[in-house]
Amino acid sequence: MSEAIFQTWSVQRIAEECGGEVRGCAWCRVAGISNDSRTTAPANLFVALRGQRDGHEFIDQARNRGSRCFLVERGREPEVLADEAAIVVADTYQALIRLGSALWREHGRLRPDRIAIALTGSNGKTTSKNLIERLLQEATGGPILATRGNLNNHIGLPMMLAELAPDHRFTVLEMGASRPGDIDQLIAMAPADRALVTTISPAHLQGFTDIDGVAREKGRIFCGKPAAGVAVLPQRWCEQGLLPPGYEGEVRTFGTSPGSCIQLVDFQGDTPTVAHYAVRMGADQESSRLKVALNLPGEHNALNLAACVGVVWDLLPADRRSEVVARVASQIQPVAGRTQWVQSPRGYWVLDDSYNANPGSMRAALEVHRQRPGRRWAIFGDMLELGEQAGMHHRLLGRDAARSGCVRIWGVGQMATELLSGARSEGVADLAWFSEAGPCAEAARESAREGDVILVKGSRSIHLEQVVAALLHPVETGGAEEKMAIDGESEGAI
Image 1 (cartoon, rainbow, N blue to C red):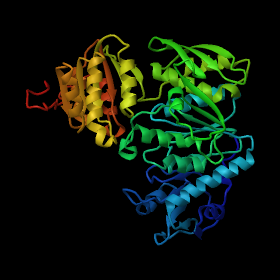
Image 2: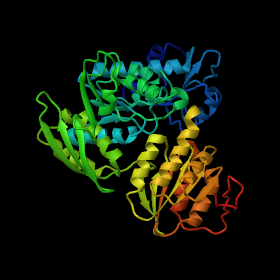
Image 3: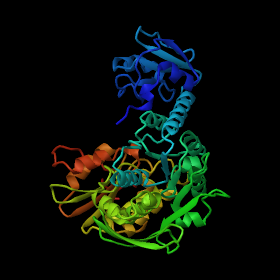
Image 4: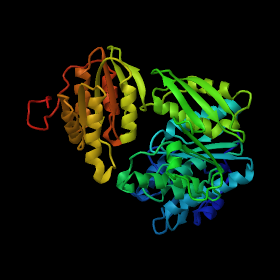
């Protein structure tokens, strides 16, 4: 593996690309980018960003962890030691974005054969990114730069681009959005050759107002300069005008309808999911048939695989396409906290979908949950950033959970009372509310029994991973159960 491009740049080169000037040592070594003083690695460029906390106040901590170069704003320059440098700019956010763009351009110069894949969507981004990465690795064997963790915004993307090396022919980059303009900023930094929208559903409505606003923003991923040459998107959203007017690239759709380029014809079972596809791509639109055993549960994941097939189909060896897709499908592992079945030693099942939540992903999780027999109950956390529609979406979730067969429903967080109200309206009596995840975790550990099938899902900041951890550990005595009645009835029964 060749050295990352960023590591070959001098401090002076970095400063020039950022629009800044160097103070101190111009020859100190720089490798990688960080904005978190707790995890900064030796030789990282520490970027002092202003947010809820001002990164300039944590330069000493970054220094103690080995950083020797600091990207700072004018007027906030630290005193630098003999082996240190400060790159001084007007705005560290804008300088970081400029640096990411410069790295992308340089990589394109070194790899004119680069194939850049970008993806966004309300749900399924990380699973789809992993599938695309695995499909390309299986087919080519070469190194691929793919987004790690949650580095999919205007701060994380430049950090990923700092890992670009000349050996990377393929890049697979997630692009997240929580407000209008986010995708434009990201796709301008790293324009894609192929772009994918996985799903459109109500999410981040605090920033987008309604689902049409979500769709408009996600569709911007097809509007890079130059625009993506291949656009992959759900068939129904293609029909509803998600693509920009006058789009001239190749359009590949996926879905369950016969008009889809990659059609999910049928799927059966839990895990593995046996999925049948019809693939219609290429000039002659000749149909290929695929049958796979997908090691991920649910129709939503079968559709994620359909989307990924649309992205990479012509990049796979023509004589091995079906073989490559089937092998990756059978070997792919679920991402921790995302629709992952885990069996407790105590004889019950936990569907761990605790990483995040919005109305669309909640519905998908309930579909998976209902496929496994047992006493079904759900522990839901608030779905955040839904704006004025938050109450409605939580009440609908409560009703949907009741209709899907949940006989016990617990809620965690401020909006969970609305969720429980919806569940009560559908006749569920075994309801409980918790203000925080900790008390819920203790109560769940004491209440779970053999034969239970428990779904755990909520927004990231509700921390329902605490509930999952408690359910998967032996019962500990002495835990205080802090269930509260939302209408003044006896504790735990509402």
